[in-house]
Length: 204
Image (cartoon, rainbow, N blue to C red):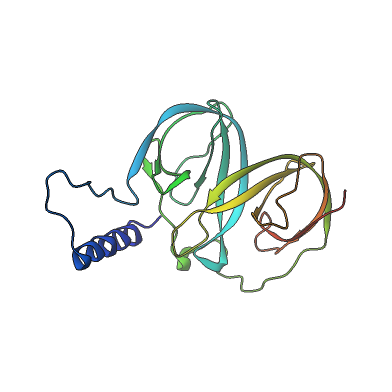
């Protein structure tokens, strides 16, 4: 995430506390920055997906890794300023933001920033074209808290692996809360965001 956006949010939070007053007691609770980085234990990548996801502006898609780790955790990271490729078997040291625990903020010493729109890989494309319906079985499924834009808050997102190994994502809702591994589904996406579901229906 852009450090400027994070700093601005933190300063606004501090300003609100000053406006509404706060205790001067030495025993008063300490304020924890909402985007404080939390160092995580080193882990090995046991499975990795490459996807393209919307971020910040709706007409821009960014490359992202979604990774299953040897300690059972699942994390995702934007590839924009990563500077390295990741593979199964790689051991990673990483940090996450306290408010967005599923997204890696620093990996092997590289700080991850949100890319500028002017430099986006898809900045030249302005059309949103829906794909044809795609029918498939759900091979695997798990949940991630993913950020889509401002406010920089995680939204519960279902990550679904299809029978051809593709990982698709859809915001969790009452309409898809009953999905299970083995279900037959039909879905479509915007061609600009081939991993983000536009509409999805369970067939059986």
